[in-house]
Image (tube, rainbow, N blue to C red; front, side, top):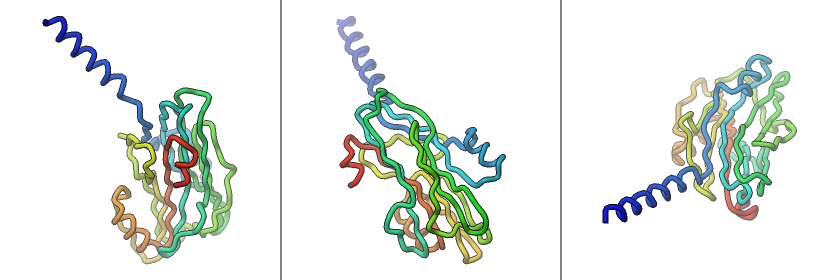
Length: 202
C-alpha cells in the first residue's frame, strides 16, 4: 500500500515537473550586450528582453510597435514582425525594440526577435529629446509567463510637452488609457504568442 502511494505521488510530481516551462516566458534584460552597445555608441535607446518559446515548432509570434500622438492612435503599426513554426522545438534569445536617433527629430525604429530582425524604418512620429521623455519596461527582470492568444505590453517610450510626466502601471488597462491621454507621444511595444498565424491577426 505504501509502495502504491509512493508511486502515485511520484507520478503526480513527475507530471507537475513536465508541465512546468511549457508556456512562453519573457523577462527584461536591461544589462544585455544589446543595451551596452546602444549606450556606448550613443545611437539611441533599446528595450531588450530574454524570450523563451517552448514548442516553437507549433507556435506563432507577433511583435509590434503601436504609436500614439495626443491620444490618437496611428492606424498601422509603426514596426511589426510575425514568425512561426520554427524548425527548432524550443527557442530562446533576444527580443525587443530600439529607437535609433538621427539629427533633430529624426529616428529609426527597430524590432527584433530570436533569429528575426526588421531593417530599421523611419518613425512617422517626431521623437525628440527637447521635452520630457521616459523609457519604461512593463515586464521586469523577474519575468512574465505568457498565455497563448493574450496581447501583452512589454515596454513604452513616452514623451510629454506639459512640463511633467507621471508614472503609470503599464499592466493596468485603465492607467494605460490615462497615459495615452496625458502624454504627447507614446510608443508601445506589444507581443502575442498563439497557435496559428490567423490568431496573430485577431
